Length: 184
Image 1: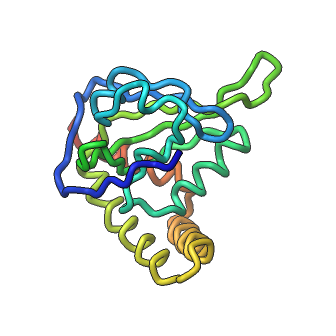
Image 2: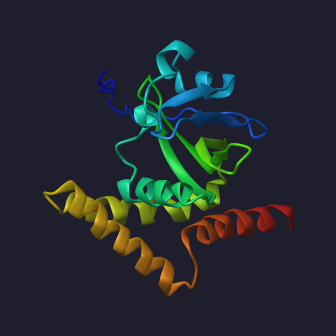
Image 3: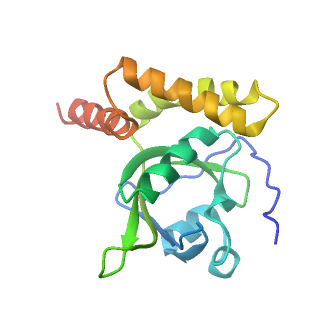
């Protein structure tokens, strides 16, 4: 089954500051669970989502290298934090601050993946959006999609190396600095 061809309409949808979007997937990224908040914000019914690849909500304005990095990280059994722009069934977008982790069985074997998403801090988006735009532009410069992902991932690593941190530290740092500023 092919994914629906939904075009972004330039409008945004949001969710409550105290709400969590939760989903679970199998090892291939096929959705096995979506909570009520995910269903409401994405605009999909549960029967439309379950059994579909999680990429059903992938916004075309998201650099593929961020997903590559996320998948490589969770497949190694590590968690990752990321800012992600998603696409609702309506064509509206919604930004999330995602925490992605592997799901383990009692023997410690990875059996799937779990993600909790919160509302992102607006100040953090002011910093992440320009970075993502540069990464997406790098991906677009290449006629071969894989070469574009590799080049943008190299650009991302170079940017992070120059700041002496990995991607999760960068993302978490954006959240922490915004949280500190908000509490002062």
